[in-house]
Length: 304
Image 1 (cartoon, helix red, strand yellow):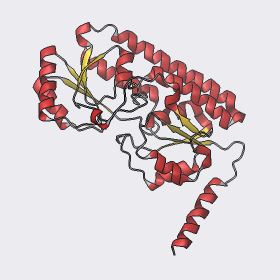
Image 2: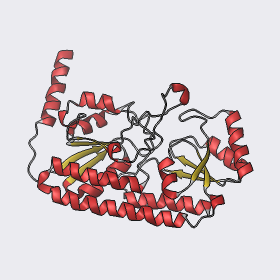
Image 3: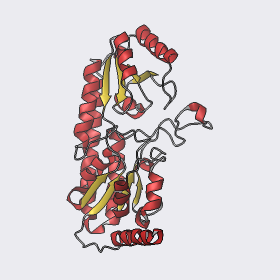
Image 4: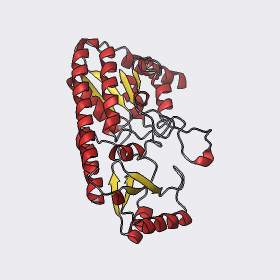
């Protein structure tokens, strides 16, 4: 029975990978995260079919690798991933079991977006688990910064053109247009945040996921609710956060929606601070620029 089942699985994957593609067939893109899926739709337009693996409300460090994700990777012509070890706990298993040679590392169908961004907080010393969830390649949470996404857009357009050369000019045009929109959005909000007084520039974060956004908007992290990345805050550390906020008159806490709310609400109640909760990543069919605008606007209004 087991041999028969294994044979059926082999036939299933062979049927997926050997289906002939017409010249006008859409490039099938599997993006690990919603922001990357939104970028792929913006660049690929009518010539791509994009699926996103992780749900927007899921912590991208700890995604449950569902069977449907395996099918998406197996059928993909292009895999777009965040990289910098963000998906290390779940993506390698999907890749290994997909039996799709086109999207394996080193192939044109494997696109690690982190290879083209300006990496921040890259450790300069040897890391250990005692430091918390520190990534050896640097902080991987770059997709919310439009200046970084502009870099991704250009590279993604080039890669789509390599995979589907019949429409390379189309991808190039759209990638440049999307990159320009990202940079204009970045400049617009940077200029607006420059109007804030220096006393409004320090904020509190839950997890160390905001360095790219803070650098973009010229804000500073005063303290994190997590004592170390990925480590749950102790009562002693929560007390330290509250005392820091009260002594420095800090008004804002930033967190992703997939992190616990109770401790943040308790801190906010003690300090009269505002809490801005961002969705983890773009939701299906959500426009990337609209998402970034909404986040920047909510931060600005809370600080103003």
